[in-house]
Length: 95
Picture 1: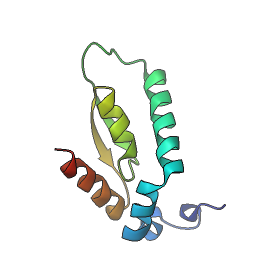
Picture 2: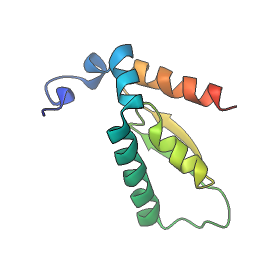
Picture 3: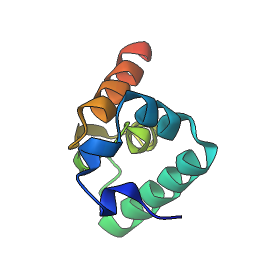
Picture 4: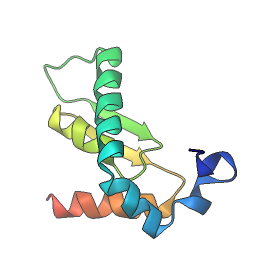
């Protein structure tokens, strides 16, 4: 399966519909959780206090959930406004 963002700007492909599909796809949720856990291992952060993490390319914020569960704060950036909107909705619904 080819990735659409390899043929053009990601913002052109991750519209509202695609952002929501991505955010609810169990395969993507699992992959993002694994990648984020591995990134935390590689960062070797001091876990005695929360860290502030910048997630560049955060998409719909799936990694943010893992970061929060690990006790960290995060801020996400993405080129797709629709992906950020989905991430923002998740953030609002959990507060």
